[in-house]
Amino acid sequence: MRIDVVTLFPEMFQGFLEGSLLGAAQKAGLLDIRLSNIRDFATGVHRQVDDRPYGGGPGMLLMPGPVVDCVESVLADAPASQPAHVAMLTPAGRPLTQQVAEELASRERLVLLCGRYEGFDQRVCDTLAADQISIGDYVLSGGEVAAMVVIDAVARLLPGVLGDEQSAVDDSFSGTDRLVEGPQYTRPREFRGLRVPDVLLSGDHGQIAAWRHKQALAATSRRTSPTTGQPTQTS
Ligand code: SAM
View 1 (cartoon, rainbow, N blue to C red):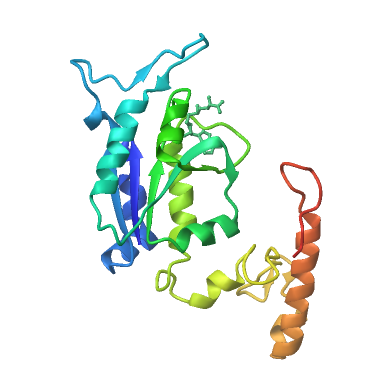
View 2: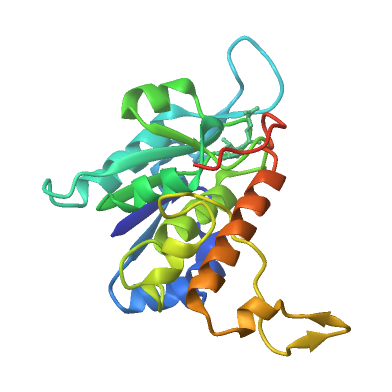
């Protein structure tokens, strides 16, 4: 999979992309992540990329020209047989869920647009017919951290990226039931008086699976949706 990130701050991604899972995935040729700087497409002596909003209001908006030119140059740099899905990071976007991450991971090519300041001129979205993704109901100062969240969630779903393919299926919000994971334990058997549940030491795989499912159901019903305050759906 190829992911292009369109940003004013490509340097923010350096450590993140070199990290263990993503670094290894890129070295193994499973993932190709490229960074493009919107500033390279600015015109004029000041290489301006932002301006005041029409109608007044605080802050500055990203001008459509440099952003659209940058995305179009990224899109031109790939075979027509590899169509790209363009997604803007914005608080107004559809919420990033595991299902959305799975949908994005099924694409061959993704272009992620990181906003800054007060965000994008609307014509960026209109011109590019871009998908819009939010990583939650709060406001970040830029789309870079949001793009990193999307990349991380997507990359671990790509075949071969995780050491054990089964772990992505067993994870919270995954598989057919989309339950969150219940409690997990490792050694020692007892820690500060807290013992590992006997069933996990029983060696009875049927009972262990039944216990885990029950715990997952309980953990899922204890969660509440951050947006509705209601318990989350269990299927
Ligand atoms: N004025 C915008 C608003 O009220 O919706 C907020 C702009 S924010 C300060 C700057 C940039 O950060 C946005 O253009 C977007 O790219 C990114 N951003 C902020 N919060 C985000 C979120 N929850 N999800 C995705 N991107 C976000």
